[in-house]
Length: 107
Image (cartoon, rainbow, N blue to C red; front, top):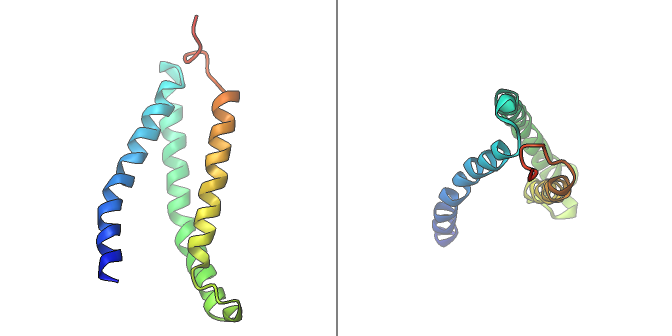
């Protein structure tokens, strides 16, 4: 268990930089006059996710250690997070080729 905590402590700083990188990529995809809309949308989305996910994951955990304990899946919140991340990755990859702003297209 101690080794797992040490591995997680090493991995967390790597993921902290991901938000900055994603925001930088998104900034390059819109025109300068659309930057405020983009930053507002990203902040609103981040705020909504921050409000919803604790209750969602707590509820999923309570469900799988309570009524659905027989399934033997107490890690269901992590499984849900992995599925949501995979779905998001697919969505981002598909939209990266579909929705390109004029700022990103060569003239």
